[in-house]
Image (cartoon, rainbow, N blue to C red; front, side, top):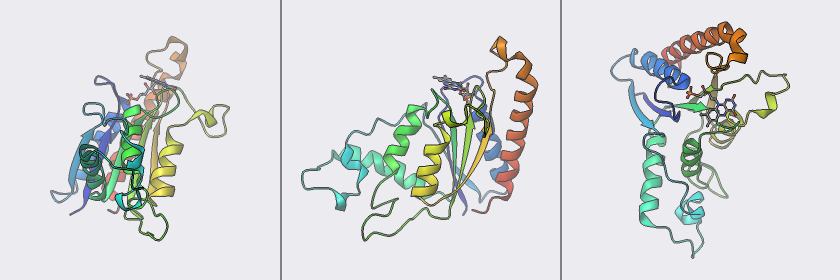
Length: 215
Ligand SMILES: Cc1cc2nc3c(=O)[nH]c(=O)nc-3n(C[C@H](O)[C@H](O)[C@H](O)COP(=O)(O)O)c2cc1C
């Protein structure tokens, strides 16, 4: 059964642009039939703790003898890992907060990027997530167009691409929504039309991608 893990991390319960687009993706996925199942995790409503122990970066057999981990922390990490490993497709709502990731999403990443488990290390060459799809929905108030002066300020998508793509070997697609603050910031008033068009395009693309992505 094709299974989707859907993560949201926006702290905006009212008008979140990323949540709207992840919801469109989930709609498209569910439309494919009852066998297309979904697990949703709201990282804002139920935030992961900050990584409580650096030893969790290593799978148990790679830990040093003094790296004894609190069993509750181990169990918590396994909840996130098991959920991720059960997914054929990962969908991540990733707003830009201070040019980077919401801390809740960063905490989730810190729990699942595990050497010797999700990432190869030494004679452990397995990459259990390799070849699976990840879809990142990146919402940002301003614009960071490729080639523009501010393009290099985006520290939201690059770390996700590194962890999900480079480390896990997933095939990563990015859906970007820019200028989401145009309605709110008077100085951006002349960008409202473009922002609305980008939001529509992102929603439509997400729904359409969900209908054709090969799990
Ligand atoms: C704490 C915080 C920090 C933000 N930092 C930035 C930023 O660095 N650059 C930017 O373009 N927008 C920034 N924004 C605006 C958000 O990226 C924008 O509102 C986006 O739409 C949030 O995603 P959401 O609509 O899904 O909640 C910030 C918003 C918040 C709440």
